[in-house]
Length: 144
Image (cartoon, rainbow, N blue to C red; front, side, top):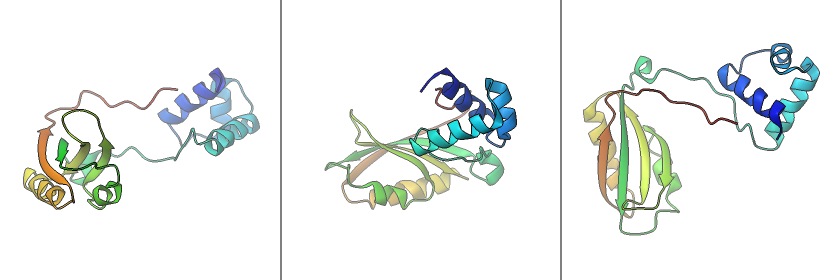
């Protein structure tokens, strides 16, 4: 990956709907060359997907919590069980005092409590510790 690829990624992270002509102009390439570079970045797995950044509160998911999940066993094979809980946006096997860290979005704290109950139904889960976010200063994309 060179500086032009990094610049293309930065431009796409700002607005992935831009035409290849506009992307190319922003990084000093023709539309065709920009298209070719983006295609190659996709083929190499650098660009995994194109998505839309949505305001969770506008969709009724204003409660954000990070939950540390304790376990009595290795949780590395439990990805599908965590993915089956639709309120979980992210799940990570971690090192430290907990086994898994999940990012949860719900409409209410009552719904968060229900998610915690469902986490206990996952085989191996022995405890949870939830931290509710009061305010998000910023979230940023991965920089190239």
